[in-house]
Length: 403
Ligand SMILES: [Mg+2]
Image 1 (cartoon, rainbow, N blue to C red):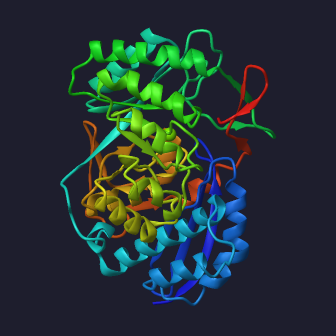
Image 2 (cartoon, rainbow, N blue to C red):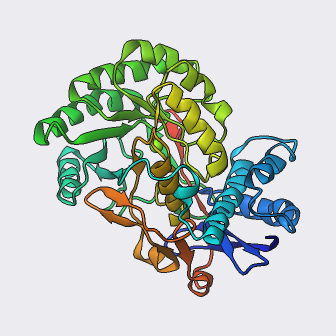
């Protein structure tokens, strides 16, 4: 089998998505998600101008060699743009392999390690009351795990909350990012009170998660983790900027709250110290930004040696193709933890055809060959890309801070 053509599809059914479609001489094509929120065209151009020309004529079954060809062969290794492009190709190659052999991809990765996959969703409110109502809504929908984010009294903006009643969409259409503001002390004073109320309102069995979005120092995160211990969180996510992996040592010494990180990592070298020193409990890298299924299997194997489970990043700014790839990966590995799932806009699901079933907070896999995902290419063309950026974030005195 040979790759004869590959194209990049940039579309915006509800929001911007980048997809690679790789075609073979046997009439089979594979799809991969190449979406990098706010930097979409960088990945699209990199694929079109530099990677696709080197793919033509290759055997799609040689996914391991193709991965190393693009990872090592580029000389300039790592980085989000580079790894998202490689990840999309790798995803599409596994899709082709599954279709060619007429099996779902998970059967090529080790088969079924579980019958269903638990997902967590997001509940967010502008204040405590609205947040409790949103958690109740998600519980009524059958979710057993909910990420809880709330507006903080005295703060205008906060990560994960929209200022109106609309669903939360952080990427804003425009030529420049919007600017938000942040106050760590108000946040730290409020979050334990919020979780006290949430735990008091809902069953002890409900899994609660929270995301600090890289905004704390290690000692601030240590205080938060310690104060949240009575409320038994499933995980506390992205407390500190993780470029400094050693920062987790200090945090880990002070709290037994389980820690999750990794959505902005793109290679095993971003989490190697965190894993081998047992500084985290969940690794949140996702297939699209982690360089594809091929390297993520290796990361999961390393993590499994150290009692660490997966919790793949899966917000609605990655396409349903990435979600499908995460589900095949999560079905096959032993140390699956949980899958993030926010749902998608109706418009998104008109373009992306998703075959896996979701009910009462759990996914079950379809037996469709490949990733079990397809696209309506004609409909995709009708939704044109619009430039959009994630916000930037400043402290109240104007200092640039992590968003
Ligand atoms: Mg996060």
